[in-house]
Length: 150
Image 1 (cartoon, rainbow, N blue to C red):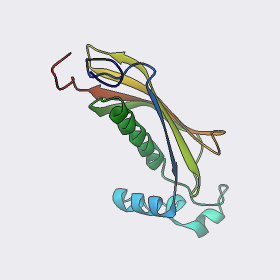
Image 2 (image 1 turned 90 degrees about the horizontal axis):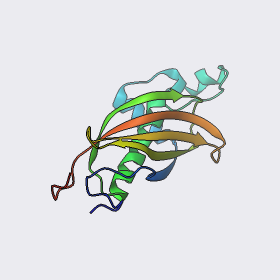
Image 3 (image 1 turned 135 degrees about the vertical axis):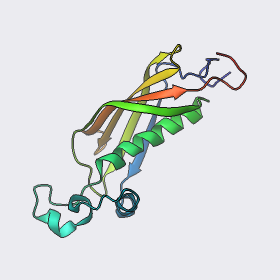
């Protein structure tokens, strides 16, 4: 039986985790290298000093990737084996700047046992939770428990 008390391999509605990470120069540099996105808003401080934001910002998809970390932690803590099935209604509300600490709240909002899916609401903030920077819904496809219960 999973840590949630379910025997079907799905997380329980209300299961939640919080993940925090300070976005560093190395994070942005490595992410740019991996993705090939060297746009100046991420990589050129001098360029950004002349823009309204005044400084470089993290890639939106880097912030979205932090929600994946939260998903993996939830699955580990609740003994769920799942893969990402997609995202709905993802919105990048405010920029995340280098040095900001992102707080990701990730909670299971609903499950569909027939489709083996769980929907998780994602919410990312900075500045001790005061500034909302990202929202969305993550769809997880959940595999049955290894003992065959479904």
